[in-house]
Length: 621
Image 1 (tube, one colour):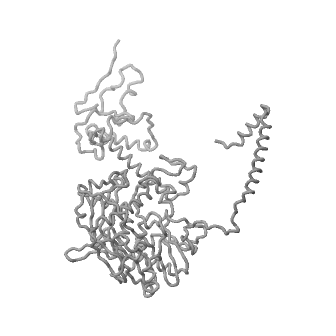
Image 2 (tube, rainbow, N blue to C red; image 1 turned 135 degrees about the vertical axis):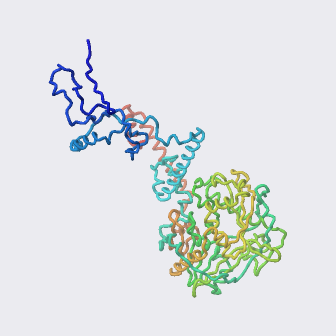
Image 3 (cartoon, rainbow, N blue to C red; image 1 turned 180 degrees about the horizontal axis):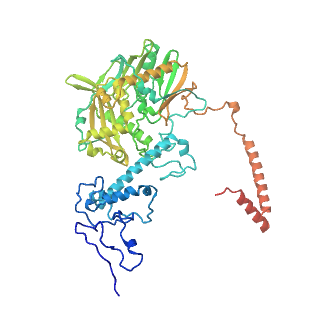
C-alpha cells in the first residue's frame, strides 16, 4: 500500500514556494474534482489565514535587523517577523473590514512566567535573623501607632472610654482603660479642681489665640524690696559625672515656704501703699506664660478687690508640685499607688528639687543677707536658702504688676557676684525615656537634654520663665537619678550643668514678648470683671482655659460640708427611748421568726413555685 505525497515544487530563485508552479501540486491525477479546481488560485499570496497560528516562511535572511522591532520587547528577532511582509500587508489591508468586526476568543489562560518579576533577581538574600528583626521593628511601630491613636481617642472621647460596656481591642476591658490610653482618673482627664454646679463659666480661651499675642515690658523692672538670705554655691558639684556620682542628701530640718499671694505680708503692705494694681508670684506668672505648653490641668484663683487684682493659688494646688513626663508621647501608669504614677512622680520630683537646691550649697554658715529677713520664717528657724525679690513691671499707664520672684543661691567668682536658680531633673526609669543617663550623660549630653525637652517641655519652660522674671544670671540644672529603678527613696546626683536664662529660652523657643502678651491679655480680661472671686482652670482634655465665677467663700474650707444649725440637726435619742426602741425591735423580730417557722412545712408544688418566682425575680446573668 503506497502513499503519494505529490510533486514538491522547486524554487531556484530563493526560499519558499515559487510564485507560479508549473504543475498542480496539491492533488494527484484522477483524484476527482478536475484539474482546474486543483490548480492554485491566481493572485492569492501565500500567507497564514488563521489568526491563532504563526505559519509562514521559516526565515528571511534578507531582512535587516533595524527594519522594525521598535517598541517591542528585547529578544524578538526581526528575521522571523513577517508582519511587514508585502503579502501580509496586502492581506491585512484587504481584510481590514473583517478585523473591525472580528474578535478572537481564546479560552486558554495567559502563560505564566517561568520566573518571578525581574526585580526579584536584584534583591540580596537576607538572613533569617535580619528578617525577624525587621518584622519585629514593624510590629513595634504598629503597636506604637495604635497606642497613640487609642490615647488620642480617649482624650477626645472620655465619656466613651468610661462606658461600662466599652471594650478595647488590646488589653482592654470593662474598666475603660487600656495600656496605651488614659482613664478618667488619670491627670490627663481629671480637672485640678472640682467644677461645682453653682459656678458660672464666663470665658473660654483656646491656646491658639495665645500664640499671636505680643507685648514688651521695660527691662529691667523696678526692684522694690529684697528679703531673705542666700548661701553660696559649691562649685565642686560642677565636676560630677556618672562615674563620680554623689548621693542625694535629705534636709528634713530646713523649712520650705510656698506662700500664695494674698498670704504674703510684704505684698499686703505694698498693696496697702498702692504700689501697683496687679499682684502675683513668679510661679503663677510662669504658669500663665507657659500655658500653651501645659498638658495637665491646673488652676489659678483670681480675686478682684476694689481696683486691684490678686492672682492666687489654692492650698495644695498642682502648682506646688513638679510634673514629670507631662509632654511625653507615652503615658505613665494610671494606678495612684504605683511609684511611677504621675502623682507619685510629682511628689518625688518636688522633694528631689528641694533637697538638691540645699545640697549644692557651701554650708559653712556664710550667707548673703538683704534688706529684710525671710518674711515667712520665725526667729531662729532653719530655713532654706532663698531670696525674694519684689519687682514691679508697667503694663500700661494705669496698670502696674508686682511679683515675688525667687533666687536660690549666689556665686562669687573673682569678686563678681552672680545670682542663680537651682532645679533638678529626675530620672525614674530609663525604659520610659529611652535614654540611660548613666551611659549618655557624659558623652551625649545634648541627646539627654533633647529628650528632657521633649518629655518635660512645660516644666523646663516654667523654670526658664521664673529665672527670667528674677533676672537670675545663671540656671543650674541637676540630673538626679534613682539608685535603682524600683527604689524611689534613694537618689544620686549624676551631674550639674549651668545655662544662661536668655540663651536657654532661645534654645527652647520661649519668646519673652509672647509670654508677657499672654499675661497682659489675662490681666486685661480680669480687670473688666466685677468685684468677686473667680478661678482660671486649664481644661484637662482640650488646649484651652476657662474662667468661672465662684462664691466668695470658695476654697476657704475646701468645700467641707458645714454643719446644720442645732435646731435642724437630728438629736440622739434619750436613754429610756433607746431601751423602749430596742424592746419594740426585739418583739418585731420574734414575730417575724415565728411567722417564718409556721410557713416552713409547705408542699413540693409550693416549693417549686417559690423557686420559680425566685428565679424570675433574680437578674439575668
